[in-house]
Length: 215
Ligand SMILES: C[S@@+](CC[C@H](N)C(=O)[O-])C[C@H]1O[C@@H](n2cnc3c(N)ncnc32)[C@H](O)[C@@H]1O
Image 1 (cartoon, helix red, strand yellow):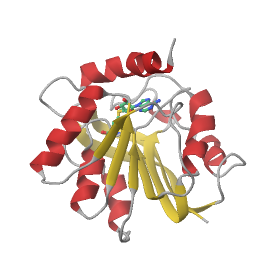
Image 2 (cartoon, rainbow, N blue to C red):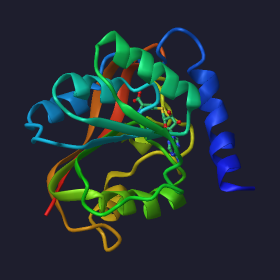
Image 3 (tube, rainbow, N blue to C red):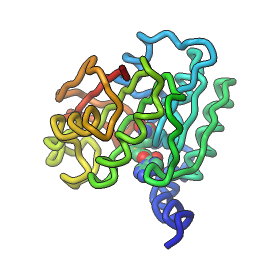
Image 4 (spheres, helix red, strand yellow):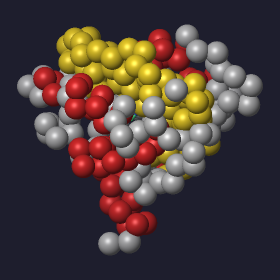
């Protein structure tokens, strides 16, 4: 299977999910991401990466408050929906259809990397999330929310596979481990929350939250 085929295969499921007029996870930014990012001042000529941002709700929101938003995601339809949302708000987002495991990450180019619900098989996550962190500048921020392993029996969204869900200690060890650049921990938590993003992410949920900063 060629690299391009891998992207196509992975993206088809998400293209289908994003194919209706509705926005699968709503048009508003993820609340945890927006709370963290609102506390940061976008520096001049900043670059912010929103990996796996689907229909682009986080990237568009950030663009509205002064970030130069970039996205990569598997979904071609997600890209179209993101551009549509950006147009509604008169901002622009640079969106590439790409796969985490194939993407090149130049050293130290981003002031911010932020993602919500970016669940990948653990063997991919372990290698490629820390690799992605090398593209943060010194002092750059990493913000992420995902479903915790204890989300498994709940019906408020997320993958039904323990391998895809986040164990806080395990993921933190990866994000600050030897494959990652040196990262300071600003905040980590496993917490219960009530989601109201869309019918797919609604109700009592168990999540993990990370806010790290590159040394
Ligand atoms: C549950 S959706 C979340 C979308 C968005 N972050 C949000 O909160 O609205 C997961 C997204 O991850 C993307 N994705 C999954 N695996 C990926 C990979 N290996 N590389 C890039 N994107 C990926 C999918 O295309 C999908 O858009």
